[in-house]
Length: 88
Image (spheres, one colour):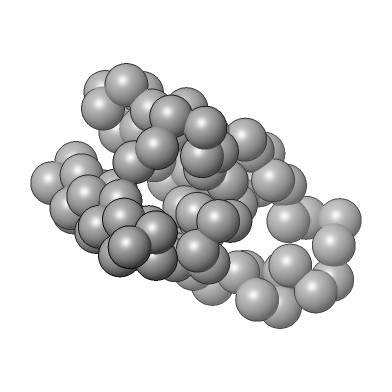
């Protein structure tokens, strides 16, 4: 994944699954901006039953829960390949 690409992590505060997702990202050396869906009706409708959700804003790919370290690593690799294909 290109270094300048930022990930978004959709979730809510006090969400133990969101904390697990953040720990998985951290274990892979990846950071994400946290987007709290609690106060946004549109985001709650879109992500409410899927959180946590990791999103690549550059190509709109998303990975919704449940995921583990391996599937997250695969998602990041696939997102990288998608981005590389767009550049060629």
